[in-house]
Image 1 (cartoon, helix red, strand yellow):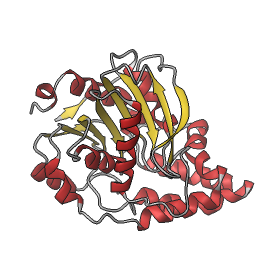
Image 2 (tube, rainbow, N blue to C red):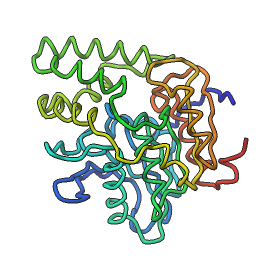
Image 3 (spheres, one colour):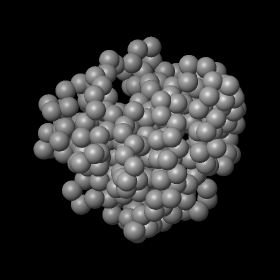
Image 4 (cartoon, helix red, strand yellow):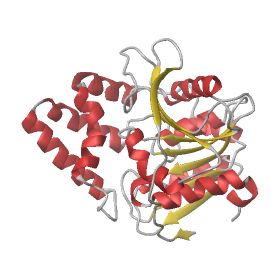
Length: 302
C-alpha cells in the first residue's frame, strides 16, 4: 500500500528530560511529556543508532496533544545515554534495559505503543516478544529485523567518528554526513546544519567513547536469532518503508521474515520517502501510532 505525504502540526509537546537508571551503570537519557505514572497508555519513541531524542522532534510535533504520555529513550550508547566500556550492547540486552526502565516508570497496568527507527526496531521486536511485555503495537520506521548492528549506518558512523576530533575534520565529517543523509532521503529540506549538528553532537562530545561504543555495537551478537524471537510477538507490527531504495532500507529477506513469523504485520510504502521517514514524513509516523492506539483491528487491516 502506498501512503501519501502528510504535513506535521505546528507545536511539539514540552518534554522533561533526565537520566534514568535501568540497572548497574546502565543510565539512559529519557525525555517525557505527560504523567507517566498516571497514564495507562504511553507512546515510546526509540531513535536509531545515529539519532537522539532530538531526531524525534518532528514526530512529537506531528502527534500534537494526545491521550497518551510520551516517552523518548536513547538506548545505551546512543544519543545522550551513557557509553560504559564493558556493557553488553546486543539488541536483546538493550530490550531488557528498556523493559526494566518501563517497569520503573509506568503504572502496573500501563501499556506501550512503540515507534522505532532503523536497528532500534529490532530492540522493539525483542521487547514485544517478552512474555511480560507491555507493548501493544510497533511502528517500525524502515527497520527490518537484524541480529547485529553492523549496519550501513553504524559503518558510516565508525568511518566519520575519527574526523570529528579536530575542527577541520569536524567540518568535513558534517559535510559527508549531510551527504549521506541526502542519499537516504527523497526530500532534503529537513537536512539543515542544525539537524546535522544534533545528530553528530553525541559523538563530538566524546569521540573516543563514541567510536569505542559504535565498534562494540557493531560486534555485539545475540545468542537467540531474531527469527526465533519474532513468533512470540502478539502485538501488531506496522512497518513503514520509503519508495527510495537505499542500502539501509529493509531488504526482501527481512520483509519475508516479518511476514513469515509475525502474526499481525502490515507493510506500507511511503511515496517520496527514504529511510529517514521520521524526519521526511513525521505525520505519517504519527498517524500510524494513533491508529495502533485506537485498536489492533484497525492497525492490522490489509
